[in-house]
Length: 327
Image (cartoon, rainbow, N blue to C red):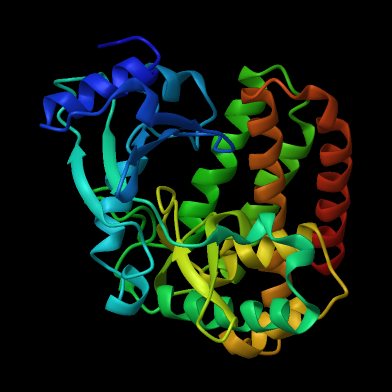
């Protein structure tokens, strides 16, 4: 099966593993940008979700960071998490990376409890929101307790011995992507030079810790308990997890991308236990921010959203100016 999967294709996949599901019970889930997702309603039983990875050809046509093996990476990552954090993840019902039924990896998982935090908005009071940010800080710290001898994805053979090597790989990929997509390569060349100058600062990070890499409100689910107190009930989408500097975790970078004055950063750090940043920490943070902006730009090209790029590139130049000033 090599076409873009649809509801009929999903029904056939489920039939092949012994599940009799009608097409009407399969509903596309929108909002994701990498995997295809379909909700499977089972009547009296809790719903399931079928997630289907990009094919090898789709990944090869995209930016350097796009992978067709993300669902495999997620399965490996789940085994690395502590029991309390793994319990928040969807439970895997069936996983297939053989490519025998379809030309891509796919997984059947339980539907996570609760609602996506990003969609709750005004349903949460200020106090409730800060409570969730503290809880997310504690959970993020828990994810970061898993340690590896090498930096990079959890798959065997893909690790880098130093943190600067992995960061250099990231920015070289962005430079290649910019050239391939017809973008101005100037900011990406500049970022590459900054990383080369910052090797001693980057390599002060000697311990590779597990990070989610795309941790934010849209990947966090929230439920209310019997006393109507909100708490985090689900975490999803670990397909870009890797061992890295924990300060490069996306939740730190996203707050830098969209700074807020509502106390969320302080609440998160209270739960996480953030240390007072040094000058080297600030240099590294801005390098990670520049890389994240580069990822955003190349993702805009992948999704054909060029109108949003000028503002993002202006922001990238500003961040690079800041790093240069510190160095």
